[in-house]
Length: 231
Length: 373
Image (cartoon, rainbow over all chains, first blue to last red; front, side, top):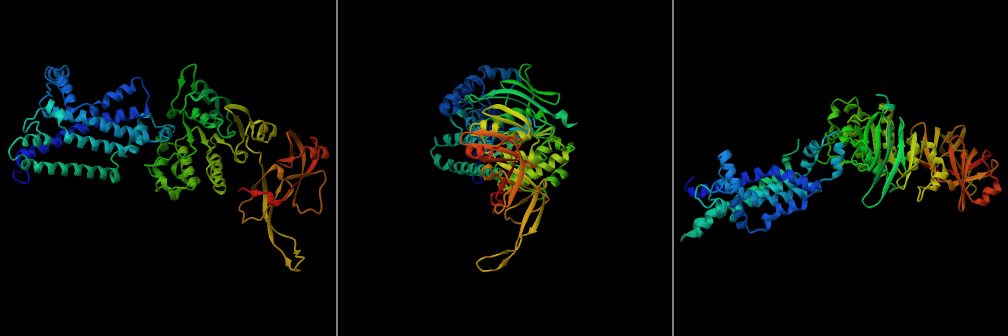
């Protein structure tokens, strides 16, 4: 595909960005749905502390979040070390590190959208489902989730687009390795250091816009017709 | 399962964080039991406790020989294990599902002896099954909600003001559907209402509740106990409700208009309370054998003798059963075949020398009667 709008390195950055954002989104979606429900419906000890913790990446400088991730998931970090010795999984300086950075940075946005949507589902409908013999889980699956569907889709979309654009935390934990961890924003950043940087990166800028617009369009389709979570 | 195994016994207390407290104790019957009382006295809370969406601070709830709640033994059966069909005041249909999907939402719908085709037939909701709930009218929504509850194969049906949001003609249609349901499946039913006319039409048994306390319970006649009702703060107004039977249309006597000398004749509806004739107000065509009429106690005039030469068309003879003296007015209950309450001034009461056991005549203008279906 070299030469068609983008060169090979740029295509690789596009593919990598989509892969990273998709894995980050789909990987955290179940957690976002579960925590969104928990925060919207339950009262428990330490709830506001948990909410604060989960929102921290929104307010911290991304580089600081990246630093924390690097400390935890680097080869010598306690989590990174455990993952490597038990599963042979290395996170730092791989695309998985980029996905982790995107996931952590985008998660608060996704969670907030899902939590708000779930809080708006009428508790009365859930009670009605329970009186009709549906268990708590079944009620969640057949009533709450389908009714919060718009928020779930919107949250996933926000996370995906935020993941596409992730820069600061990514460069800390995944570095900027062409073909391996160099996502679109990192490519554009690197290209700007070269003499013809603006021209070199213009194709990717267009690609970013196209991908984000495409994601928006898919999300709108899902919200209107698809009913992806309905039976 | 015989209905008596599905009697509900409840003895609970519950306190809201805002301070309102509830302490109720009653038992339902085999037929229709009404939980009756003014608005804001905790009736809906009681339903929440029965359905299992609220947990009492103290007490027990039993359905037949099954314990649903026992605070001392730390028993609390979740709502999905109770088999109590709940029809909520606002219907609570699932907006993301079609009417059909709503009806068969319960997994028990497949094995229930109450079947989808029969429910659709009895409630006449066949034309609705492929629609979305948001397009339904209030009455349609209540029927679908009732059908959905029935299809969950309940042991007890519980309804929160099922008709209070509906206008009068619609209300009576929905009540008719409900009567059909109870006749078909002999399902013990508890319904909440603040409308004494609805309660008297439907319930065999009444539990009277006010300010979070059970005041009385017993046969539906306790609603006719004016002393009880008068004791309720902000109690509902006492309304007479008479069932008029052997309904028929009849020709008026010919009258001569004094001014023009024209001869006029017309038709009107009349029926009977026992053997006593009642003339109904001018109304459109009435269907069926019987009809209910509603009127206020102060629309009743009492007379010691039958009166001739009056414009009042209805004179019902009855025996005085109860006299309730209130500040500024006296309520008199007469048995004319059914109970009728009349309101008179204390002066009139003493002049007529009203005493229990006396025979009096109730004079009621036809125009004071409201036909309620």
